[in-house]
Length: 83
Image 1: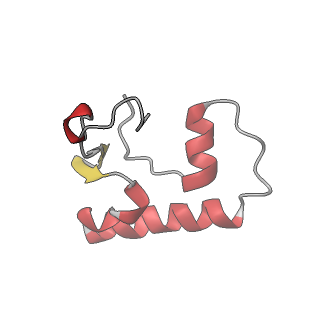
Image 2: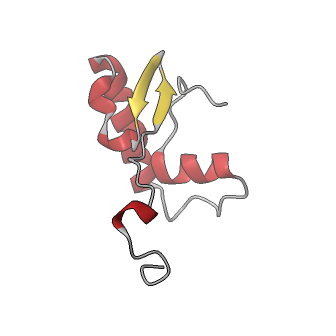
């Protein structure tokens, strides 16, 4: 690619900005790294979900959907709004 487009202005560069809507707040992605944006009580709930997911990771069945994959890897946060 660099040979085909060698000039500095041949590339369009942008910074990825993504958010997760949770508990009425927009939390920057990745969610796990930014739960500090939530109220303290919700931070505790999110951490509990992540800990449960880590402890039960190998016991949980293989996910069949993206939603199941999220729950298996990151835990359940019942307040997260899904689009």
